[in-house]
Length: 232
Image (tube, rainbow, N blue to C red; front, side, top):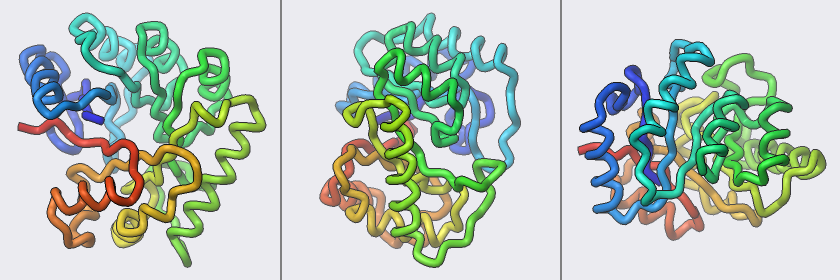
């Protein structure tokens, strides 16, 4: 899964807002690397990110839709139900909500449209995405919290086959905890496709593997989708 940020303040420095040439280069990079799914985000979620208005996020999405290639499957990376609805209405297939589907509006959209969802783990008591939680057993605690949220969503009407899970590497966790989850990602095999996003994140310094080794580790551990930046 390739990442395209329609922003000016992506933590990876690869935002393409207002730069159609760079966007087309990312399409070409994705095709060259046989990437079939693109995850489109119109708001940065890096630590200390600045919130943008709904109108601004909509404008950014519309600027992408004008130049959208029809050669890919699309996922919308958003915490806003209105943005998710616009994306789905424009043939996006997946909703990737890094806030963990805490919004009833977002849940209702997934139910009504039958869109696939990526359930990203977040701390249930946290006010912000990056508020750190102290874990005694991070792998098992995150697993339990994901399974609890999955059960809640199914009880509300989301179908089992709509759900993929993401342990939320780099969100609300100390760097060593994110590294431990990545090293033990095989333990998250409990019947749902696994999505991981480690690309360009600082916690990788604690993993002590090369990019190729991390990729192979994820694939051999049952990961279905790996979110990667389309850097030059």
